[in-house]
Length: 269
Image (cartoon, rainbow, N blue to C red; front, top):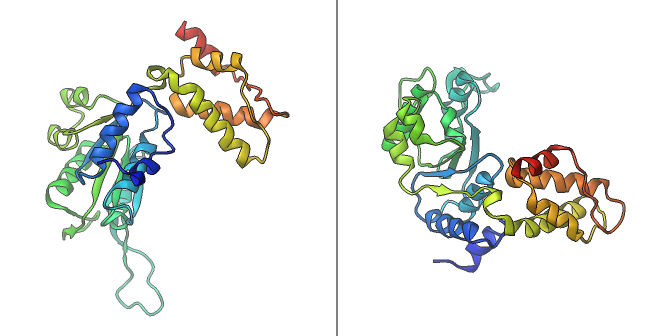
C-alpha cells in the first residue's frame, strides 16, 4: 500500500512517464517483501538510487545498507564479502591474538547487502552467495565454522543474467532465487518526457550546491536534451547539468557541451 512515507522515499527518482511510474509501483511493492531482489537496467539508469529508496521504505530501514561492488578482483571481493580469519592486530588488553577481519556481511547483518553488478561475481563465490540465501550462513576466508546472519540481498545487473546462465557464467539456482520478481529500470531514451523534469531538478540541485542563481533552461536547450540519445542515461544527464551549472554566469543555464552529448544526438538520429 502506497503511503506518504513511501512516496517521500522515492522523491529523488524524478519523472512522471508511464515507464517510470510502472517501475516505481513495482519497487514500492517489493520494498515490503523482504526477499532477495534483482534490479536490472543499463549503466547510469539509476539502479542504486532505486535500491536505496527501497531500503528507506523496507522494514530494515533503521538498519545498515552496505554496498559491495562485484567488479572488484576476485580475492578482494571474497574478503570484502566474507571477511577473513586472518587476525588483525590485537588491542593492548586483548590476549586472544586479535580479531578476525570483518566482512560486508557482518556490517549488513539485520540490514541490506547491496551487491552492485552481480554478473561479475566468479562462479565459486556465486555458490557461497547461494548458500547464504538458502541457509542464512557464511564462512570467512580460511574459516571452518558457519556464521549466522540475517541480511536481505539486493543485487543489480546491466547484463541479461539468463544469457549468462545459458553460457554457464552464472549459476541457474542463484539466478532463480534472485529473479522471482525483478525490477527493470527503464533507460532514459524510453522516458524522454522525464528529461525536462530531470534537467530542472539537477539544475536546482547543483545551483544550491554551488551557491549560484541559475533559474531557467532555454527552450532550445530542452529540445536538444530531449533529442539526444543518452547512452549513459540519467547519470550522463546529471553530469552534463552539473558541468553546465558550473560554467553558467547568469540566471539562464548555459549548456557545457563535452562532445559526448553531441555524438549521442547524432547516433540517435
